Length: 559
Image (tube, rainbow, N blue to C red; front, side, top):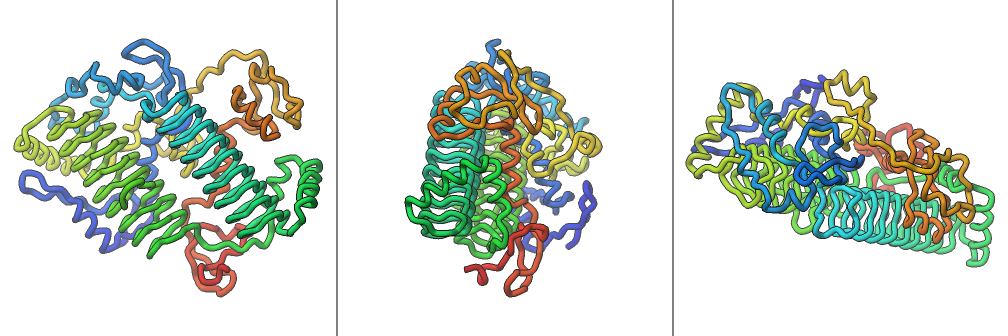
């Protein structure tokens, strides 16, 4: 079946298996089945709408509405919302059931829900504050110690300026990285020690300015190596010559020039995708999955479609469509930032453990059979945070869905304009970047808010900084550096400076946000294309576009 997206007008396909899935997840209330019809938006527009509800970066200072204390928050002060600091929000000092409302059959559901979420207090950050120690500056974090500006990150120690990073120590400015230590500027690296400015490393030690290396030690400016030691530009050296040659490279080139050399390596042969241990899967960066299509940055999937950033720590994530972030779920559809042990969740946002039969719920934990609820814990049979008996719940939900079918709301995710965040401050801007005029023209909200910069002794242009870290004075901690790309000022903190000195690294010249976006651009985009294998000329699916300089080959041709 071909459909036309009602937002961008492109054609997209609905398969028979898609229709079977929508039928399978269609819920029953009061002995009636309420069908979930085929979506009205294409997969990209659906994801764009969901990602408007996920904010990771760009933190602000804001006053807690319960205590009056200043706190760090993902909600900028210009947002007309009630926001509590975490220990208050999780405490028994208030009860979300006190904010209940009755459904008004004279108004649309989404207009009522917007008024509802403006009444109920929001949590300042999406963190597990009980398992984080000295790691207040971050969002979507857990089990971290002494970390600063890390996002979507867990089980870290002494890490800074990183995102989508797990189980690592003393690692800075890294993305999509796990089990790494004493490292800097890594992308898609696993179990590495003392590695710098590299991408797609696995089980490597002391590797610098390299890409796609596995089980390598002491390699420099190299690519596509396995089980190698003392290699420079893919050429073998003796141990002594290796270190002499590296010293020569570093004396004659800045780190920026060395990184540019890495990106300009010619005639690389690459496999058409980055994934392992999969069966019948399509897209990229997928691991240990089965029968899953159009999924990205995901592992442990089974019969899923249009899912991204899924990292189930316990069980297989199965039979889910349109799911972004984070863990084990079954029979769920159009959800974002839903953690472990979720079953039959439709149109939910920011829910935690043990969610069952939940519909249009936000920031709930351990709930079942709830409809349109906000911040409930260990509750059942609630609508708009009001408690009902099972029979009352079934009957009222049935009537509300019938009403929503008439207003064309029942089978749709929350509209983007109901999100408490604006387009350019959410993760959607990373994957679907738009300029201000485009955002406004497409009827998305645009944030103009800029956090005030703290007082500093002076602001120094990045190009005035000494290249050698030994020439950087302690006073830099009292300065701001003007980013050479964006012009935005940023600061260096004490622990960060100590790391640069210990590893003999230059102080960064660019704002952390700019560094993050540059790392993201080095990963393959979430765009699947069809092109020819550069060896056998068979048609292959890949995320390497035709303008890339690499030679892209199919799995059977990749040696």
